Length: 418
Image (cartoon, rainbow, N blue to C red; front, side, top):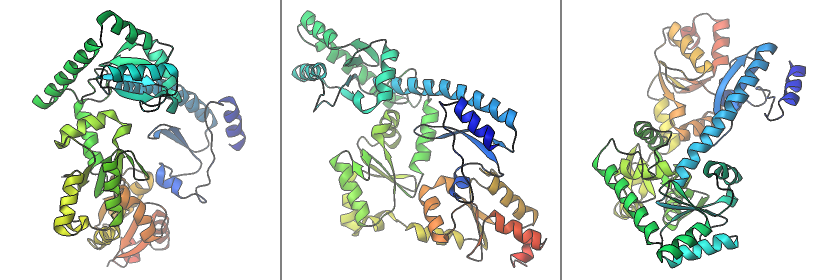
């Protein structure tokens, strides 16, 4: 199979081929559904890596066929994903401009002239620096059928470039038509969103959005519960993009509070809809156990009243949460998914062994909490999942349980549960 793998890598040079020894890199079997070797995992890169499928065993003909199939589907999917992203971007502000550089520091004379003209006419607008994203820079030309930059969009529709905006001002004497039309559309979207739960999923107003309102709300529920403490901010903890987010991060870090974060600048749909979902108009927003606590001013007040943020929000350190989980049952399992719907082959087999042996246990889905998932590996000094604890002591993973079954058919007795 090594020879075939090398040959396929040469034939399909557009794809990346990587060989991994799972014994040397055990985290791989934690990340992907690998249960036997060899296993071929087909991945689509992106902001979130997508597992397209797997093939277990040495089956050359099927491997070659699947590479061709997934390559073609990935190219098509990437095109659709980019189109959906561009649709969101051009609609992310009533007036949206795509320029070289930023509105503060334009990087070409055409972008500089456009920014100056919009400032002179007091036009509020959103901007995107196409120099920061070559993919968007290239794809937007085809998307809009407009080959140069800057490009100006009004509520999702292309207006044109600098010459178009200049001509509009010369003809009308001002850019009032651009401002008034954009304002009226923004007001209509906001009114619709606040008056009906079945309204547009966000103030982007994108009719071609790939997510329905229900799907987006379901995603928001997952995001707000992806850890005990979740911060929706501008930027990330290493590089906050506004003073309020920077202050919030500093306050949490000063108290050594573990938290997950989401950069709302990276997702206009989440940025707009979360304000409606939370009924809170600004960022940052802090969630604890899925419940909104508020923004920076509220958290500051909590800290002043209670002496610390941790006390105010009932924060429990991650290690303490892990200990509480382990102590909640004589037999406890950290796994992917739950006993009814395991999310990987190893977890599925572990659950099967326990259930077949008549062992009652509680479990925790490590996919539901990034903080727990990362910290429990350190806590247990065990790099993979599932992890089985009995009477507060780590037994190990699936291999340990399989060895116990081979040595003693009675797993209950082997775990000293009788």
